[in-house]
Image (cartoon, rainbow, N blue to C red; front, side):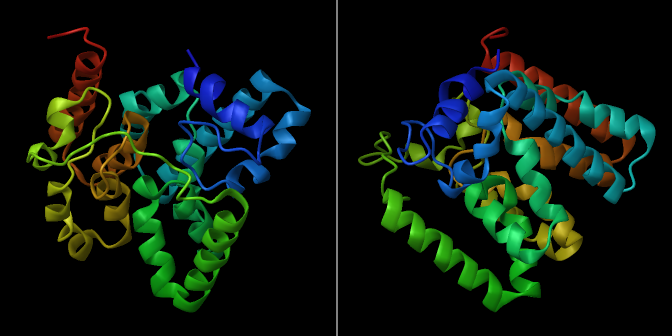
Length: 246
């Protein structure tokens, strides 16, 4: 329980100028989180999760979800897993509630959940978005050599296995890469809200917690039977991920 927070996030907060193996987020995020050191590891975790719930609640209100649909969101596997693992996706979804400058920062922290927010920010303030991106990435490269400090270990050369969506073969990866690009027409139909749903599928990796946005989108636009089925499929896929079912 809370293994991601204990193994990755808290050590990174304690060592903000040394990138911990397994941490891929924009390093400036952990400079921003430095005040959590004043409260300690577990109070900091509780605070982050409470803020995550608050962000999700604000998105629920923004989407004007009914009570029963809201209950399905908060009881869904992505939200529960985000809390259980001590993850930060919930709080970073604030990009969909923020001004373009903050959305640009949060997008760089976790692109697989905030691509939709990034596109919205670019449409509103393109020059500002580009300037902030250059500033943050450039300074992160100078200080931490990020993102080149990230080392990927998977070798996809020599075969076509990368064409198989990871969600079908990997318990932990829920991405539809590279076939997620077929979902792009949804952007025309649903505008900004579709970014919540399809952002996780446009990059090679997305954890279960990264699909909170998809659950919110489903709660807004799916008919009741499809929403309940989506909720159930999330939990069944979670059980397969943990090898509870074969």
